[in-house]
Amino acid sequence: MGVNSRSKSLSKLSLWDSVMGLFSRRDKDGFDKKGYDREGYDKKGYDKNGYDREGYDKKGYDIDGFDKYGFSNKGIRRTHRNGTRFDERGFYFDGEHRNRTRFDDDGFDRDGFNKDGFDHGGIHKVTGTKFDERGFNKDGTHRNGTNVDERGFNKDGTHRNGTRFDEYGFTKDEFDQKALLQQEEDSKFYELCQERDEEQQEDENIKRMEEEEKFWKSMHEEELDMIKEEEEALERGDNECDCKEKYDES
Image (cartoon, rainbow, N blue to C red):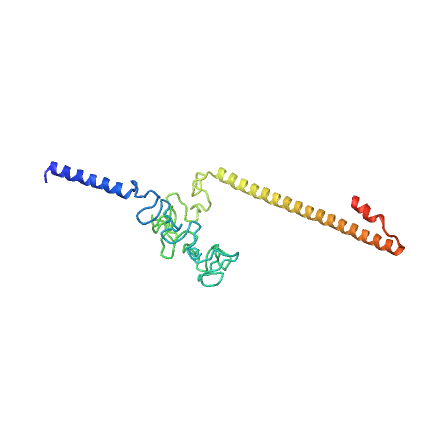
C-alpha cells in the first residue's frame, strides 16, 4: 500500500471514529451525557442504582444489606449471614476477633494478613511481593540474605547494636533520636492532658447530677410540707389554708 493510500485509509478511519463518537454521544473517556460508560458505571464506579462492579453501594453494602464480610447493616448488634454475631473465622463486624484482638488464633486479621502485612502465602499486602517495603519477607529475612537491612536494622526495628538507634542516632524509619524522644514525650503529655480533661468532665457531670438531685429532693420536700399543711388545716376545720397561696407565689 502506498503512502497516499495509507494516509487516505487513516483519514477515513479517523472520520468514522468521529462520526461514531457523535452518534454515541460519549466523551473522550467513554462516558455518555448522563455520565455512564458502556457498562453502565459512572466515573466513580457506580451504576444508576448506586452499586459498584462488585455489587456494593457507597456505604459498602450489597442489595441484601450485607457488606463484603457478610455482616448486616441493620441493628446495633449486626449479625452475619450465618445468623450469629461472628463470621466463620470468629470475627465480629468491626474486625475484632472473639479472642478480643484484631487477629485470629493463627495470627491473621479478617482480611487474611498478619501483623507484618503478609498473607498465608507470604505475599505482602502493600508491595504485592514476598518482601515488605523495607525488603523483609514473612520470616524476617532480608532480600540481602541476612536478618538485617543495609543499615543494620532487623524487621522489628532493632539495630545490630541492640538498641532502636544506629550509630548516628537514627531509627529504622530515619528519625533523629532526640526528635523521636521528644515526640514520645509530647505524646505522653497529650495523653495526660486528655486524661485530665476526661476526669474534669466526669467531675462536672457528677456535680451537675448532685445539684439536680438536690433540687428535685427540695421540690419533693416542699410538696410534702404543703400536703401536710393541707391535712392539718382540714383537721382544724379550716376551709382554706395559706399554704397553697404561699407555694403559688414561690
